[in-house]
Image (tube, rainbow, N blue to C red; front, side, top):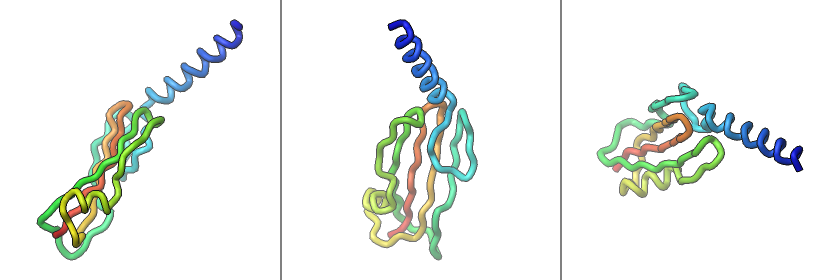
Length: 106
């Protein structure tokens, strides 16, 4: 019984150590283990549209992830039917990570 508790404690500490290390699974052109706030391009057309739509996915401790950061959802959120450019915005703040797709168009 004592051996089982010790194994659970070691496993728990290992998971906590990984979670606290800032190892987010958020894509970015530049990474930051503890703090990151980076914008970057995905695709660009000939112009930047008048409307903007955004869709995001979130990660907690690199273990739990949820959301819809698809281009289609970002376009729908902005009322965009013709996409001119697509960018992203990645953030990592200690254990919370976020990846947002930003669509511009008309």
